[in-house]
Amino acid sequence: MASGTSKRSEKKKNKKNPKPNQSWRTAETADRHELYELSVQNVEGEVELVQQFFSDLGEGVCSRIREDFCGTGQFSAAWAKSDPSRSAVGVDLDAEVLEWGRGKLEERLDEETQNRVELLEGDVLQVTGNPVDAVLATNFSYYLFKTRSELKNYFMTARKHIRPGGIFIMDAYGGSESFEEQEEERDLDGFIYVWDQNHYNPITGDVINHIHFRFPDGTEMNKAFTYEWRLWTLPELQELLLEAGFRSVNVYWEGTIEEGDEEGEGDGEFKQTRVGEACQGWIAYLVAQP
Image (tube, rainbow, N blue to C red):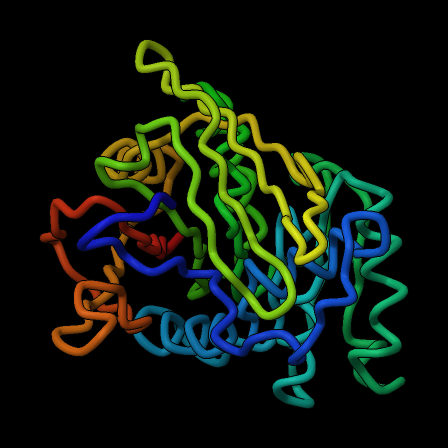
């Protein structure tokens, strides 16, 4: 998301800063996956949100989840760690990032909890398995499907993997600044995270976004991650979910801090609504019921 007044906070922003005094990091020595987790993900908060969404809209107990486009599988690990009855399966096409994530499982989890996490290399459109309580497609990962037919097909596939009474959870971003070609810097402890909205085509909705990392010694990890997406809008997503066979779709909108130094920023609290704000940048969740 781009900087500016009345800007919503980044949903994935890690509220817990990295370990202090990490000025030893350089572009040559830093690990891009570690930096991504530190700057983009807040898995403890996401676990709480999944619990909230399921309590609001699901039926029964949410124990087993499937994390599509799981990357390092950090959320899947956090989900299993949050309760002994919980398990997770993560799916991703990238063998390198999955291998990194599997290696981290021993650091994140004890042996018993590791057995409740499965990280699978595969296409989310083709991987099979027993239905789960919730399917997640977060980090805007499904934006890689650039046509209505492709995205509808993914939604139909996801619905087949959800048990009756389960839910499908997605996030989305937008706002006037999301259509601008610009950079936003966020100064973390020991490095700077850069979100680079490098290209936007208003005719097709195609965007190219990069993540860069900059370090105290002046070095930069340029294009550590690149995303070639279509910038979908909330009305389009809701319509496609219903066309894909979901019986209902609910939008959860983030509240706003009303006073203090962070006035106008997102407060991290998401509530169901049918009316959003025309702010410069926002984060929302869509929760669909099959």
